[in-house]
Length: 214
Ligand SMILES: [Zn+2]
Ligand SMILES: [Zn+2]
Image 1: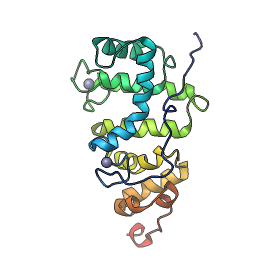
Image 2 (image 1 turned 90 degrees about the vertical axis):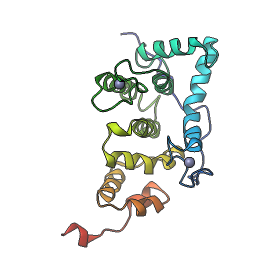
Image 3 (image 1 turned 180 degrees about the horizontal axis):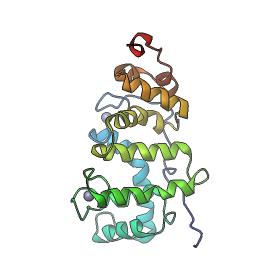
């Protein structure tokens, strides 16, 4: 098989230094994704920048019919032919032929959406750690999860929502931190987690032994 370039994604725009409240929804920026327009715009800007560069490269104007044709080609191409952000954006521009939802976000029973969602992750397996950092992978996973929340378990959706502001700053949770945060979520401590200002702070909520021993 030909060597694919695996051009990196989400690196054209600078990331914020710290997680700050969203001026529109008041939650930490990103937590309103995708319902809050401001959260969605800021998060999506990293994907859009790469897609705009691809359109430019191909001489295609945004909104023209050629843009959808390009999306179809990008999704059908071998993994690694385009930045992962462009693969994600192409999926968004496509409608699932089976359930008519945005491709890869339809209800859990849609095999066409499941297939489209599955194939995109080959990029991450091959692209890490050089063309894709762990932070970029975690960011991609969180955003895909929030766009297709019906397809994921509640704990995973809540975890993605809590994480997104910190992922935007370039931070990532260690495996141990992620495990601790999920444990806190299962113990219904979402409000305490939401008040914490980093992955480390979320992971280090004090234990509640009286709850564990019931
Ligand atoms: Zn917001
Ligand atoms: Zn579907």
